[in-house]
Length: 544
Image (tube, rainbow, N blue to C red; front, side):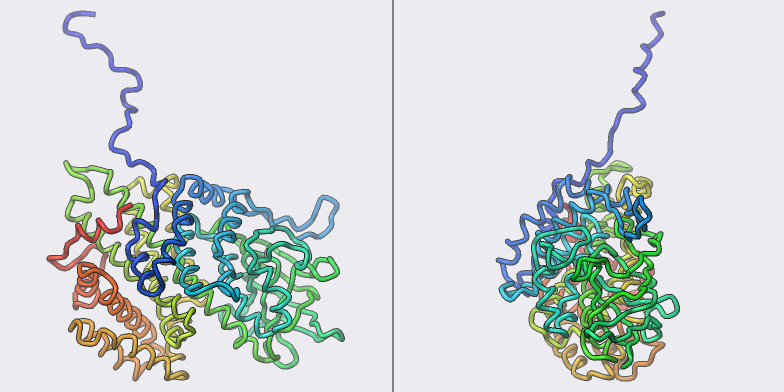
């Protein structure tokens, strides 16, 4: 080596890791969500907040997040027959799925709030817990949600409710196909749509023939039945008296398997951890729930609760995407400064934060209405289901982009959140179905509009922008027509969110929302905020 030669760099010098973001794990998703904490205090109590601390810590743990990843990396597998050729119709899940399910049931996210001794604010607490826990992984929330939602529909048949409800409320997760009375815990599902009708369930062709013992024999198909390994299903079929609701257990009282055949599993865009199946009834035995011909009215109570969980699921997806984006921007630098300190990035993060805060406070307000059996739910829930679930894909996409190319890589976890985002807008009535349901509520149940205006009246005169939006909503609702259904649903949601934030959020949040959403600004993208907003304060509130 001559005097002018430099030592050769180490062979691994190009692989020094710098300016990379540490994993988001070991954090408290409740501790960085003041909107959720504030809503729980406003609509519930400090005790409700305290009761969620252990769940929140577990939800933010590296262990839980790894189980969420593995459950999607190893999707369920259908086994139609055993090795000897016997029909078994079983779906195998990865152990991480079972871990997630067991923890969700143990935390009371299924039917626990319906217990007589559930205590005050039981549905609000469960909604908040579901929102926090769904940030771990969304797919397993489907059977948990359906189990929660089955109880009010099942109560149309008190003898069946007495038979199944204790198992549905049990804190024990007991997987596997066995006779329900011999299991430590039960899960319920819903099986409504068919190939030819989709959301138009009145077009269903599955038949239900009465038998001498009071049961019915069902023959037909169902096009989309999720979680087919659940213990019992509420379904719709054409009985002699018209479309009727029934409950079908997977295993009959004598221990034999019901004639429910799983034809195949759907290959879905997202929601990979959860099995969604096409099934056939080949003489399956069912018990009637409610009167013949009243199937939609009976099962609609289940749909109402699952729609609430769609709102909660979208709220959870928005929130975890925001957490990932804010965490990344707090630790990553570019062009001489942290990303979160760059004004353009700060505006995007602040706008994402406003979206999350608004979704959260409205979701919790709706959940509190379940506790009080109030009339607001009838019109506000389908409106929120339409709007919040419709916004989620756009919000998650923007959050993903905050991570740049790193966010587009599967290892970041953001693609899984993104693929999950459109689902809540489709399940339990896609956009047009839920928006039209808003108009149906307004025309058939005028008291729902009275309840909405009473809720909004709490902030009358507090802000001219909100007052103007409520006036526009009132005019639109009074002359609503199908082509304007989406407009009405959007206005209802925005007005409710604005009103709730004025009452329950810090001024910087309420002002940010009103100025950006109701201030007459022509906004086409997130991050296009009015001048003068304190974006630093908005981002600080939500950063893990």
